[in-house]
Image (cartoon, rainbow, N blue to C red):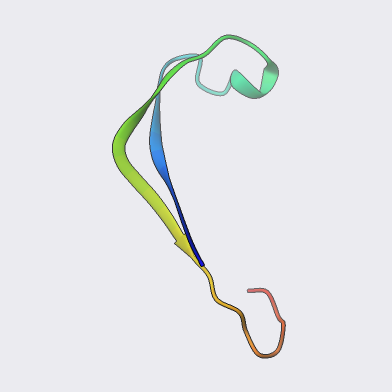
Length: 45
């Protein structure tokens, strides 16, 4: 399984979103992706 998401830049309010305060942010053209696959031993690494 692969998941991708656009990058984000904060113009104002970095680290304030989780406090419920205002943030001015926008998506950028760079993306990040993560790929995973199932293991036979069911271990998560």
